[in-house]
Length: 416
Image (tube, rainbow, N blue to C red; front, side, top):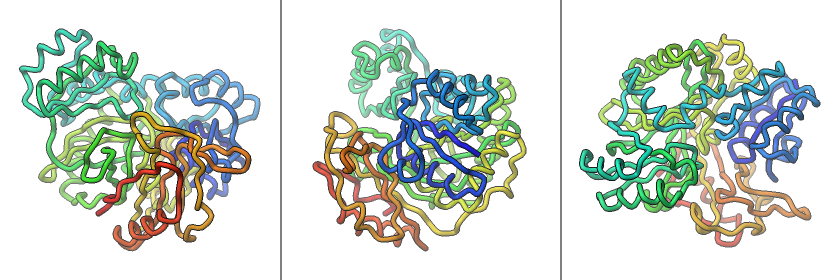
């Protein structure tokens, strides 16, 4: 089976790395890929947002399965375009991807199908949004409606901060057209959790749980990022919490998908806020999360290609998912200044000096003249397994000391 993986981050590296283990897979292409992905797949110089080129490549190269990593191509309808050419696709259609592509649509979906979430209001007019702030207690959460690379959520401690956030998003276009509409919602207290689920159109089957660290700096300080580290399983997942999520979130979400006539085949990522063995949905993503993928897939014992095909065919069962008992941790090495301004083209050294049980998933890297150079904000995801989270994290931080690029930054409190 020939597979095309679309994307260029650590998530796509982890997907390619896991697919390579499958006896069903004869060839993996990745478009556009990166320096690390080139070690496990053939990189193709086509951007993830060049939808027509991706379709043409898939047809020309007789691709059997396309796996769409990032949200942009999904929201743009790449899955629909490929399916029209009779190519199997792991990833939802444009209609399903709207759950991530529009925060206001997603919130309306949750409200309609009684899915626990924060109280909210949606606005397309900044004046009305500013006036609405009197309805909310601080802190207040202001979200750009569209895609903003994981950075479009602003937590405002005061009404003045909320006013500035609304003006920045809607009037100053901090996130471009993603801010043409916004969602203003109440701040939820508790502990964040990430739940990735395989969806086959008929059922939602959770993967192992994970916890992501969104803030840029230790102690959850600084701006929101795409994720600075992660561990799996999440230690707050009790039997009571699992039961609550199954009944109040997974079953209602599945009812919603069916109610909206969405034939969802792929991954549904559910961001949760957990308190007292109950949970509310923070957001839906319609693809593998990053860096959650880097800690969940290493724990998957099952054949990922087989799981993906069963999702597409609509016959995935819980028994198809087998998991390692070992814990997994990943720590992101980022370019100095991320998530705002940062420099690229810094040489990465030390990658060949690491312990054998360390896996480094490349995020923002490229190859030039035989050297690995930085090419993004989140550069590497350094990953390890262990009998305990402590064992895994100690392995990682010990090996990070062997690695270097100019202005390298990372959080030192992942999985503490």
